[in-house]
Image (cartoon, rainbow, N blue to C red):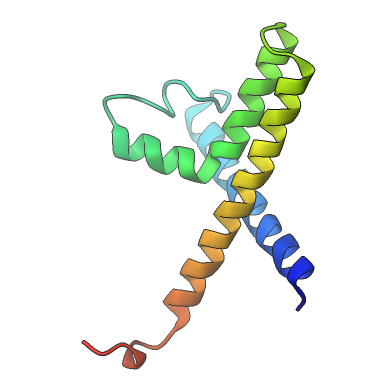
Length: 112
């Protein structure tokens, strides 16, 4: 696999994981995914970090589209949020692939 295919695969993995996590969170809570309660809370920091790490690109796009509809951000800011969400999904894919690759290695290779 060449470098372009690896990047596209990592992006697809990150986008799929983000979509699955975000959709599951929306189904469980019954509310639209956003950087707000019940997904992000200052009292439950670890849960908020996990939710944001997994479904963050989905949250960012939802919030950016809402802000654009209400006229709070410009089109350029919306494009910037979209580019950030793409980079975030790619990074999430890289982390998930690296974690899966690490978890797949036999424990005999590590010297304890």
